[in-house]
Length: 328
Image (cartoon, rainbow, N blue to C red):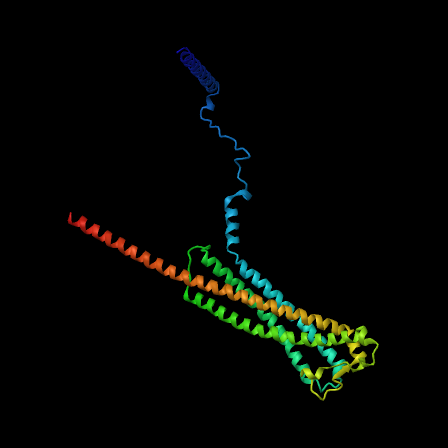
């Protein structure tokens, strides 16, 4: 009993002390207002601390906007576009320089008469112009596919307002799928065609390595090791000399034109392969985007029908309530 009585007494003393403090504070405030009558209407506003001040960099709107923009980036289309640009640039740039080096090698060593390789020169010049067209076309086509990826990603994820898709948009997506498929098949042919000069230059280089080898260097049969460029069909059989043997062939392999053309053809072939991979990647992306758009359009049509039915049901209920109120 005594401890309970002691705690109660302590609580009473604490309450009385708090009342005294409060009464003293009220007396001081009243004294201040009596001495300065104009201070009664004055309102004190708390000074905001540094923690209460909101900086523009820490506003949640900017962070949410950045996350929203990053969520709308089609990363798969971006990777495919970079790969496509890189492959086309390697194929067009290296292929153009390698074709010019090939013409120089043919004119200087394998076909001294200009009329023998006139057709080949015209074909190579035409191919160089085609390379310009390929580079321009795929630059625009890559940008268009990247923009289509941005549109489809934003539409599917509903990042910019209400989701809307039309039959024209789905038709354009399907057209891109078909066009990318056709271009992919065409670039498979380009990739196979670009491997032909690599094969030709590799045969010449391997023949030169045989000539340089110690086993054949001291023998008299070196001059019998030859390369006949006419057997590849790029120059006619009556072209002179058409065939290079022995030390003359070794000198050709040591020239800068041969070394640069050989390696540039290899890089151009690799660029064509990278372009094929990029188009296959684009084809998968476009097919999946088209399927997403098709499913989303069906869902949108279902939601529109459902909203229309709910509106009609609400109209019927409101009409029935009005009729009941009119009867009562």
